Amino acid sequence: MKRQSSFLVVSISLTGFLMLFLALGFSATQPTVTAQQTYSVSGRVVLGNSGMADVTINITGPNSPTIPPLFYTTETDADGFWSISGIRAGIVFYTVSAVKPGYVFSSCPLTFATTTTQLNFSAAVASLSTVSAADFNFRAGFCSHPTVAQESIASTFGTDLAATTQIATSQPLPTVLAGTSVKIKDAANTEREAPLFFVSPTQINFQVPPGTALGTASINIVRNGQVVKEANVNIADFQLTLFTADASGKGFPAAVAYRLKTNGAESYEPMSRFDPVQGKLVAVPIEFGDETEQLFLVLFGTGGIAKAGVGTNTQPDLQSYEITIGGTPAQVTYVGLQPSYVGLVQTNVLLPRSLNGRGDAEVKLRAIGREANPVTINFR
Figure 1 (cartoon, rainbow, N blue to C red):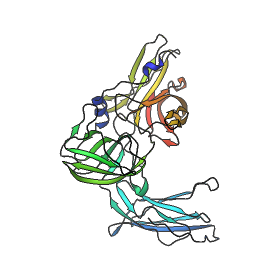
Figure 2: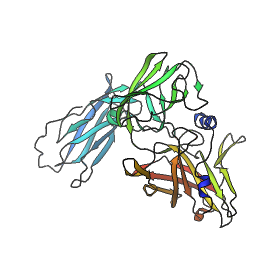
Figure 3: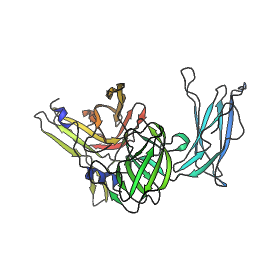
Figure 4: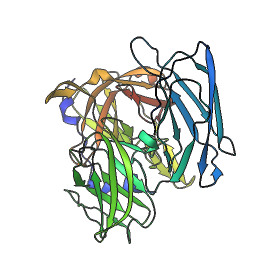
């Protein structure tokens, strides 16, 4: 293909992209397992003195070459009670955890080896809720603390986080905006100030500082030298999430179509536009041109790049990326950091001509076993 390298990185301005996505326990001693085939476990989740409804309870068994992974789930009722039946006997050490966005739970997690009476959790309101700034999807980690990826763009939500609203307008990104900073102390006990994109009284967008170790980290919101909010966050190695046109994490992607003609001419075309009559974003249908042209979907996300290799001798592992568009497999041709915007990952996908005339098509991207948030594009 001619001049493929010329489009590998799409140039976008910091301010332009900012405005796009800102628009808007204990361990049990191992007993002898009884001969029963299955059994039930139950418990309760309380917030203060009241039962807490709609908490997801997950029970997981060991995962080893000789033991298939086991998973059971349910939700608490209006009074906070839960029960799971049919748990396979003979498996030592199940782990049970409680999950609900905006809350943390103790003890965490609870571990048991055989039938037991009550497995109870106490809930507390989290002072901060931290998510990927691309899809705003809460991913529970240890003790139901939220999970974000290394060096990713993250958003944290709370109250009284800053005195006013301020947006970064240049690079390198500042570590203080409107008198507010974000400090992250990682699992290796190293504290770093996070680069900031945006602060407001209820939301801060920042990059997880480069070098932050994997595991549970503390996050402190500092205003004028005083810590005003603190919480824990789990730092993962990889979780690609995609930015969307309306900053909701759903619908049309914050993406472009790249067209390359045989004479070397190239163009970038939007995926959506705002319709003032309908008062909402609508699709800009993709049209396949002459059969000699190549058409690519260029997606923007955050949360890392799957790599192959050992130590520093690594490179993007394109074979780890699987993508379907309207159920049709497509080829990922490039994944890399977008150099004009901190923490932004660009993914290029060659569009199969069989999608011509498909209409709406859901884009599903998966890498190293983890799925990005699905988005929708349209073909004329």
